[in-house]
Length: 500
Image (cartoon, rainbow, N blue to C red):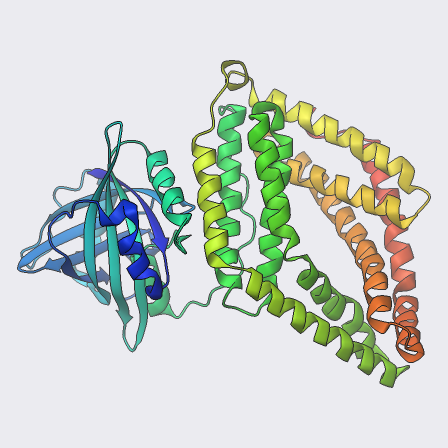
């Protein structure tokens, strides 16, 4: 068995000439001639290998045939590490050299049921990049297609495979290439894309993952684990948002940026100050470019639509107001699609991953107990929420907004540190925080909508009247949720907490 460490980068086919002419590639020696690789992926009728995250393929390269078995590994920001077994193929599968007993047993069990599922056929050009210090990277340019029945999907990507060196060396090279080329890191292997094509699986918004840290990690190790989960959410939604109209992609993209910024602040005592400042600023600017579209989505779908659906009063004016806001939303979405440049997102993603892998671990911080670190950070956030809560008793919008922002930081911290706390108590505490934050979120949505609607209405008395009607319709719920949120937080913060 060998561990394959690679970084996958997609790019538009039109950018291939620029890629080949790039100074880092044009002058690099070729590793043989360009070859055409024909691959067939096998599974059972019910795709049991896919369910076990095992990939089995045969590959024809000229007159040479190979059998390859791969298992799922870790993949973040395009950087993948996974076990692989490869041997010659003579027309019959041979799993005798697989030194992972469970994998071998599974393959033997289904061997008689195996049948072709999909194929890939692509041309591969390989260059050898040797930046120095014993680093050797194989750069492969793949162009072709994936075929599953009547469906097909193009392949146009660069794979950087580590032959000698460290995983971070792949990211450093990718940063240098992405500075001049429209590259985007991809976590989906050709096999995963083939299965998706075979199954007809739609692309869906990716939500935040559950925390996977453990008490044995240092604060810096825990930060890396959590940051990589945020990157996976960022990467998947940024790629999909550029080609899909569903506003949830933008929403989840913004959440990934907020979570990552909260994570930076939360772990700031364990991280280099310049790393925290630099990436907090970059992520803030990135998220801000998507804000208008999301606010208008909320205004249309959650503020105006319920009113229009349940009343005929002010019907003509409401209809006009809906039209004005809908037009503004479409314009904002078009602007987001224009700003959501895959190359710019790719540069940010690759840059952050490179910086993340290069983080130093201070000996003092590295030896700190994670549970102690978590308790100190959570207690500090709870004190900040208490301070905001005291101010919010006057129910002024600015104070409720400040409370909501601080409470959101506490919620993210609880989610990040959840595996370190008693599960039931922490889950119960977190549910109350989440419910209260949601209530305050609605209050804030109304306050934001008030400014936006009045701005859209301008001096038109009919539209301003319709806007006033909308706010009056929501007023009872606005008051009820704001009052309840403050009351629930008084009770929660006055009681015990799950981190001790």
